[in-house]
Length: 277
Image (spheres, helix red, strand yellow):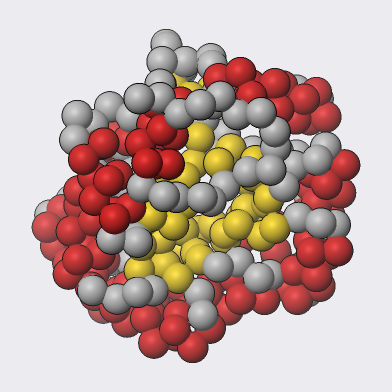
């Protein structure tokens, strides 16, 4: 059964990448003014900033820091580069702690020409190498499966089953998954795997947008909810059946929307959130 229709913005979160033209200070102020409840901060918005100050500014604005994006990119052909990735993920964990984010979303990575099985092994090893640091900071790691079109160079984790299997192998309370409808809507096993990770307490994040047809850019042409073919409300229903009570995070990569007036865009997000999510 699809979820019931949303009636307020108490679970609405925006990713800073969604309103890409705004810096972090503007995003915080504008989200708060628009009565958005949560913010997911992308790491580039923290560059040249005092991380603790950003975290406090978010809190003072009345927003909840939902997550930090993104860590990951563990695979590499040379060990030294794999260690560089591990070190960078530990920095991401520290950044998340500074802004009061409960988890880091992992775009796990892949290496063109390297066997996917080897990349997946390196991903597991990389996450395992970060777990002591994550526990010490009290920050969880959310494995985000990406659409198979990204398997060559962005992520060797392409289904929720693969992410759930990784969680089972790592068997650690500081590892979970992020479910993004853009990447997973096509999967015939999606409901089963959402229920699986929800029952295991591994469902950490839920991201929403839409898949436009035709899609003119596989990275930067995501749609506003209702502009495409994803049954977002049905998938949200599966997520909520597990007891998940977190945010619905709007994550839209769109050259078209980034070129628009961003205040108008937020108004459109709020409309679409209630009507189509």
